[in-house]
Amino acid sequence: MSATSVRPDGGVRGWFAANSSGNVRAVVERGFRVVGSQNWAIIVSGFFEPVLYLLSMGYGVGALVGDVTGPGGRPIAYAAFIAPALLATSAMNGALYDSTWNVFFKLRFAKLYQGMLATSLGPLDVAAGEIFMALFRGLLYALGFTAVIAALGLATSWWALAMIPVALLIALGFASLGMAVTSYFTTFQQMDWINIVLLPMFLFSATLFPISAFPQAVQWFIMALPLWHGVELMRQLSVGHFEASTAVHLSYFVALSVLGIAFTTRRLRSLFLR
Image (cartoon, rainbow, N blue to C red; front, side, top):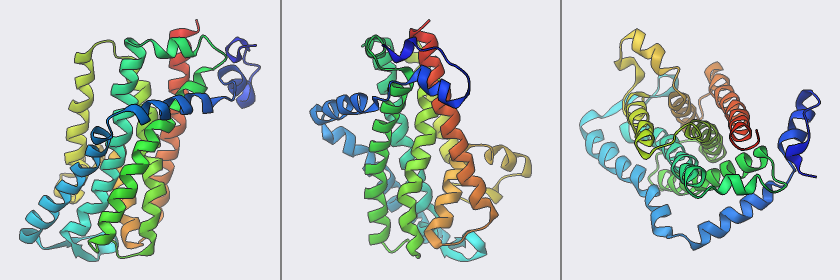
């Protein structure tokens, strides 16, 4: 019996029964076969963007800026200030590439999800499988960039190792949100809206300079953006400084991930299983 034919009987178990056959592995296995046949130079190229930012901004502009105020009010080098932020940005970009452009093509042109949902797979299986593949790309970028940060001596605490799993959490939040939003797009022109949102968010999320540089009203707006929470979380981990806001940043991405996955599952169901 197809999992999609089961009607919800209420509660979390009923929701899972109605949206999943428990075969996420089939979607993931297909994803890895596709990755294996892709041009890895394109995938790996996404890793070098934050590295080039770090070298040019961290050491180029950093030579003019000097030390800045880091977590806990301690002075740190400008390169050490932006390195964790660029890691959060790298995780975001890696996850969003797979969960937006790739999903858009599969959804609107390849009709891949329509075919998958004609089998025993449920919308939650498809959403979880696609998001897992987005996390795989985010993991590759997080591992590589963390190694670069460590090699340059920009991580001053062993807590910096926790930036790798946290990068996956950040990637999960953005991937689930990106896939949900992409499900509403029907043309390539609409996909440009993603870049219109991402570039300002990157520039204004305290990535390259402290949030205190903005007026108070602008600061409140920035603190509502997901990337700012990711940047602050990574920055605290890089120096091993924690405070109450650390739990807030983590909770933000847990909530974003849960809501994004639930939203994406509902969208796939409404699109293909009416």
